[in-house]
Image 1 (cartoon, one colour):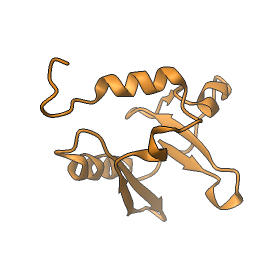
Image 2 (image 1 turned 60 degrees about the horizontal axis):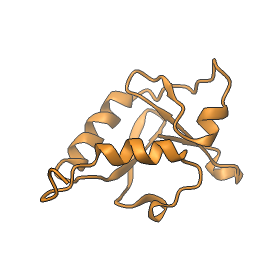
Image 3 (image 1 turned 30 degrees about the horizontal axis):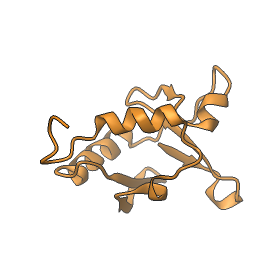
Image 4 (image 1 turned 90 degrees about the vertical axis):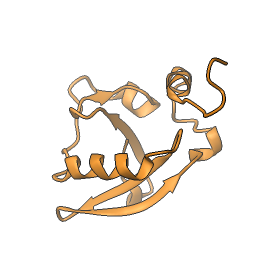
Length: 109
C-alpha cells in the first residue's frame, strides 16, 4: 500500500504488488485511470525484505515503512488498521484479505 498526499490533507492510498502493478483493491485504486502508476521507491526491495522480517510470526500486521532520499525509515506496526472499518477498502477486498489470514488454533474453521 502506498500513501500519497499526506501533508496536503488529501491523503490517497493505492495498493501495488511486488512487480509494482496497481491492484484495484480500494476506491481510489478502482477509480484510477487504466495507465495510472506512481514512481516506484528506489529501495522497494529493501522495504519488502524489512516488512517480511518484521511481520514474521504475526497472523496479520501492517508494517509502515517510508522512503525519503533513497533511505528507508520505519514508522510503525499496526495490528488492526482503522479498527477494521476502513471505508476506503472495497468490501470484496476485506473478504480477500480475510481469507489470507491464518489464526493459530483455528485451523479448519
